[in-house]
Image (cartoon, rainbow, N blue to C red; front, side, top):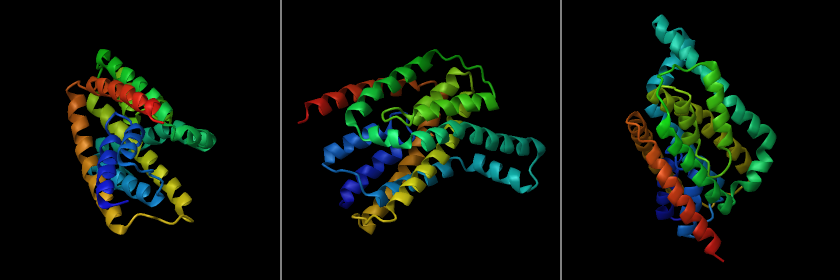
Length: 266
């Protein structure tokens, strides 16, 4: 993999991991366009870790409150309750995806690299995002029950073509959660999933030899980090303005185009 391919794949990973457009579908498109098969685990791990670090930068205030609420560092009582509640909600919301990962990982891996299935599922993400235009913002605060329901939505996103951020933000909005809180909770939920995926890939890479040079790893990682920061900020602004449905139209178009390209190729 040369530096240009690493640059493109880093951009795709950093943007689409957080934007509600399905990273798996766009990685398939990018690989087909570049004539690559992204099978180097060291590169996958690097860009995933970089994406997680970019997300940590965006969520630094929330993560800081969560850490300080455990460390007893003199937070105000309200902030301490907020931090501990967020920890509880993330733990609860992560349970469904963890269960799916433990018991259905082989089945998911078997279909994950199916380009046809990926593009067939992408329009479903699009339709779901379009439905959110009718969501009435009740400005509800998160609760254990709401966190679990959003977590179940995240578990569905193990399927290729289903956007994790799309279904979690959409589910939270349809449940009446405040727009800003819906986005930030989706991001917080995605951190354990991204890091867990990177750890799984690391365990699989121990006996594998990397074919990607250090320069390509560095370029892909730096670009993925920067794009993740940009994507997270942009998505937060768009959702606060009630524009999540725009991504729905995009997913419909990409899904249809991807299916045409996939079925037309020999």
